[in-house]
View 1 (cartoon, one colour):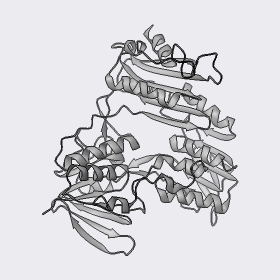
View 2 (tube, one colour; view 1 turned 45 degrees about the horizontal axis):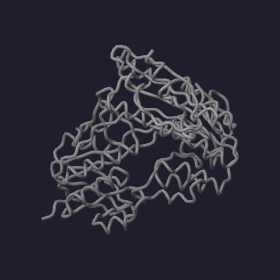
View 3 (cartoon, helix red, strand yellow; view 1 turned 120 degrees about the vertical axis):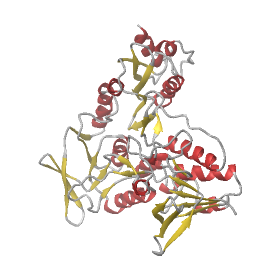
Length: 446
């Protein structure tokens, strides 16, 4: 009898696991249960589809259930797994279209239930016109509201990556925008000097940035009309909730699958959980941080795809290993790019390092080349060992891929001295003789 693999969740991790398992063992019987109406899509593209930069939201879909079926993978959309029985090795499933419930048996189970957007306990949070952004249906609903209601005022609650990307997306629709962040800066994970540049870019594009303010309620009648912030009413005909994401661990917790210190499912470097034949990957699972040496929860599509591949290969009899992450991210905010890898200064100090940060601003290209732009680079390192701990950058060009140099150095465990000696490329259209990373590294070296 064929071994049956049940995968809960059809996002990046789940479908990567399914595809890799199929390539590793052609005899497996593989089924994926997905609660929404879509599998295998690039969620990071949603803001650009809502903006209109991508023609259709559906263009971010990588593969359909029909395409997976031709590979011998059954991907069932609108199917929600309600419970897991690890002793009997079964799942209870509801067909959301018909309402029918049934029990399925598994030999190998993969949890890829992803993350859940935080919906703060505010009055009015469920009013029409208030949205989170996590799946294709969310993006379609926002796009439909923009086209049908044509809002002239909008409020974004949260100054993280999604909030900033949605500020650019909604601004393209010509509305008056307010962004509210309860902390003292946007991009809370960045050092304040670089976050201030991002804030200035938002204000330059007429986004009213409110920092250190708390949302008290969302008001309206049959639809959203306002957001109440520290006693003040801000008009809002659309509201985007972008206050964070939590790992979707309800099923795992109820099934007795162990959670780690971060609150996500604990896994080893093969993506195994504490329960035999149960694997976890993607936004529901922890990852090993190469800089701190500790488990961390960083919900990124890159990590989800890699962890899913590892889980899929191993459940099919392979011996793959996921070596961990350094937490590399990049975000576009209007004409500005911001990126980071590794630890911020505050995080490094909290982790017990004797950390110091050095920043430098230099040109993205040779100074005599048209179009050169300043890039600010901040490098964090341990003063005792001189080990590189992290890096951040902000600029108008060349930032998003330059951060990969820092990521590679972090993964290799370089010191600040080794980074300063890097044989980086030079050509006037692309970089000056002394790249901004090298300038910052040499300052740190001194």
